[in-house]
Structure formats: structure tokens, C-alpha cells
Image (tube, rainbow, N blue to C red; front, side):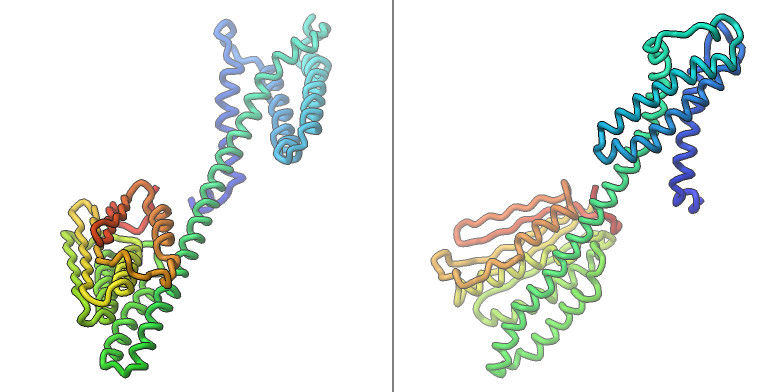
Length: 343
């Protein structure tokens, strides 16, 4: 059946045939004359030819290309030709009584022809609308995928830039923590480069990455404060968009360490219930009067907001507050047990 799904012409032909058969039934049905009349088939076939010319010539060539004058001119010619065909060909062919010798009023005949041809043409336009809707959905999906790939491509250089600067500083000082930082950085980069190719990854892998990520940043604080991380999940069968949460953690470390020389406090919590509702919290202390102007605002927060909007529409709630020298991020995500995106 795969060949049938990929054959749009055949699918359209079957679509048209089914509706034409239904239309012919109502066109030929007459409770006062139950017997089948062959002239009805002849007239109906001609209407089908006229409607096909409108549907497959006039509409795609003129109407869809906004050449309305040519389209309506062609439409008038079709109905004029249809009038003469019905009066001087079809009636002469199927009738030998007075109907064959009587010339009907043009507008009266048009009132008989127009509804049938209009309905037939509507079938074609309905099919085109269905196809156009599918193309728009495909295009939107492609654009969304492209934007997500672009946003994810921004994450790695952003993270790498910040940590290479820190690593350089430790290397200059010949710090004994340098090898440990390199190992933690390698673990984090390995996850970013090889495990984050999909839009969604297993929750267990993301939690493991956050542990390494938090440990890496904690090394930079040394004895200047306290860092805590806890994760409690009742099920590891769920999937999550990679690197969504680590951006908040990175910002917490960056702004706390920049505004405080000591008493840094960073608390990260993550819980997931049986239904896949993830609750993430990230708190960090800061000094409001500290000189943070030298810090680049970067792309982190706007990046993650866009990804949340694209990957979790109507399935997330983000709240960011700043009070009593505590910057707090609270995020709720409704996870799924498969990799598909959210509708």
C-alpha cells in the first residue's frame, strides 16, 4: 500500500470518482420516474468534462495565479459552450420530441447547468485545499525543525565559550583542579555532541548530564559557597528535550559568582511524578548592588524560552522571580513517554 500513499494522482482520481458517483446518484434520482434514463448519463458526462476543464485548466492556470480576468472570461466561455452543447448537440442526440426542437432561454439553461458544474469544481478545490493544508503543515514542521536545530547549535558554543575562559584561568594558575575540570567538561561535551542529536532524550540521560554539569560549575566556586542538587523520579521511561534545564543552572552559577565573592548559595531540585509531570526549581543568591554590567546577557534565557514554546506548547509553565536577593526559576513540564513533539 506504500505505492498508493505516495501516488497523489491516483488518490485524487479515486477521491473524484467517489464524489462523482455520489453526485450522479442524486442527479439521476427521480422518485416520479424510477427507471434509469440514459440521457442523464450523457448530460452528466458532459458536465464532468466542462467541470474538469475548469478544475484542471482554468483554476490552476489563472485563478491560483491571480489572473482573475482571464479566469472569469474562460468561465463565461465554458458556460456559453455548455449552453450550445446542451441545446444543439445533446438534446438533438437524446430527444426526438418537441424538446429537441425547442430552444430554451440561456439563463434558464444556465440555472440547470451551473449548480452541477459548481459542485464538481468544488470537489477539485476541496482536494486542493486538503493538499495545501498538508503542505503548510509540512512546511511549518520543517521551519520548526530548522529553528530548533539553529537554537541547539547556539547552545554548545555558548557553553563552551564560558567554560574555556574558566579553564584558561585555572591553567594559568596551575590549579590542581584543572584535570578534574577537563574530565567533567569532556563528559558534558560528549553528551552535547553525541547524545543530543534528537529533539528528545531519555530523562535518565538528561539527569546524569545535569549532575556532571552542576559538578563542573561547582568546581569554579571552590569554598565560596554551597551548591546542592537533588533529583527524585518515580519513573525513568519519560523523554525530555535536552539541555533545557542546564541553561537555568548555568545562569545561576554565572550571576551568583559574578555578584558575590562568598556566601554563594545555589539550590537545584528536580522531581517527576508517575504521570510525567516534571517540576524543576533553581535558586541562586545574588547581590543586587554588585557590578554585573560586564556580564553578557547572551542568548541563554531567550533561547530556552523559544525552545520551550516550540517543543512544549501548552505543556509547560515557566515562572522567574527575584526577591530578597534570591533569583528563582520554577518550571513545570508535562513529559511524554515517547520522542514525539507536542501538538
